[in-house]
Length: 271
Image 1: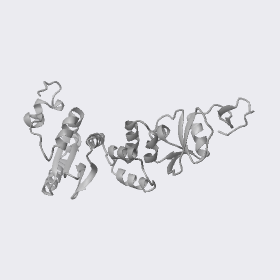
Image 2: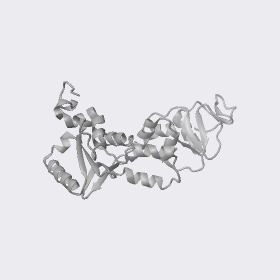
Image 3: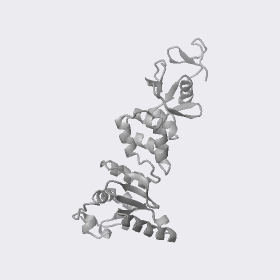
Image 4: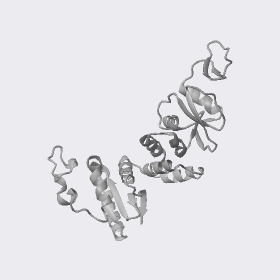
């Protein structure tokens, strides 16, 4: 969409000195702003990168000034590292999340790029272009389950990090890769899906993998997807107490069938 003179018939005013032939869509105005030296950040960056509908007001950063407008908010920033999507310029994920107030939303954006096996490598590459990150952004990255491939891994990793625990995802111990590990206490955690881990070759592989880690001095813990779904608090509690077991907890006092919701359609919970 081209800029027109304010006298153009039906001209739409974006801001002082900036007129368009008609009212723009968020996508059209974003492309125009990016062509004039602006970059999407915050919620606008999240909407584009997460494949959502872009909405007004646009959240922008720029090295140069843009006219005030109800259709965007602009902040000045000198250090800008960005990626492109078509005509749009979007701040790198670690920079864009600084302008997202909601932590869960910011973590979702980070996880969309840094989840999966290549997540840590991608993060390292991206951060090599960034001089400094705010404390909050560093904390958000720590909570984003970088490298996690599955929702289960992300859920448990985030829950542990909420307790201030350093967690590494898809970490090699010897020849075998573990879903989650806590390096400080040498606790290795595997989150098993029924369909995959019941296969004969996987079943055998899991036994030797577990034995290998134990003989290397690691404490190994395994949970099913049902454990995470129904009893995340118990899962996290047991992991945190792995080096100093809390024997008064129900997972030590009672048979698992007596309290685990994943083993019954209907059940009486015993405390």
